[in-house]
Length: 114
Length: 114
Image 1 (spheres, helix red, strand yellow):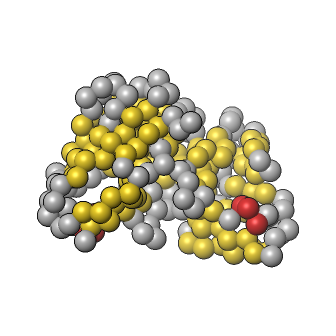
Image 2 (cartoon, rainbow over the protein chains, first blue to last red; image 1 turned 120 degrees about the vertical axis):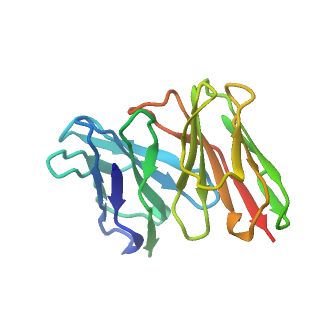
Image 3 (spheres, rainbow over the protein chains, first blue to last red; image 1 turned 45 degrees about the horizontal axis):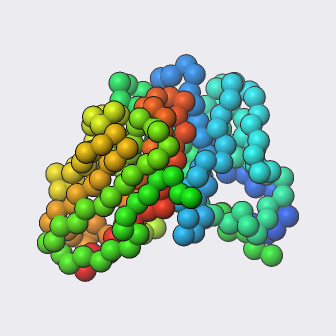
């Protein structure tokens, strides 16, 4: 079945270093839609990025990701981590079949320290 | 102002009791969902509704019953509560149930079962 796999667990970075959180997917769709959601403590999860067409980069709030159908990936990147980026990040995609269900990866907890 | 209202924000229940979590969305969306996040676990899909019809159910237990009295309402009734049900329950919505849909989340209802 369809699935989303992302860097799991905890990623700890020093402020100023680049961020890369991996996300790969499996789907039968020829045109998949992938998303990155960010979940700050005591807030509700919200959309950070949504995929565009194949090999096209999408950007928001300093983060960017590119959908690569050839490698079934949608990795999240940022050139320089900030303390305020500390949060839980989910890669999500939509499953196949008649009942569409946004499926989330297991989440990556990003902690940025001084 | 929050567009997805969840009530109550916090609740404590005793084992064996029953609780109802309320969700109302004012985004004009046609699809609504329930997700659960237990301590140190990722977001877990529970249900999806479209035009007040159940589309997908990934909850094994019949103790969890969604109820949609209006198009913009999707409540969650939980019976015979167990300590393992302790989690934050997020309601979400999207314009329609489909591959391009961005999810919008409520602030969550944090349930503690003693």
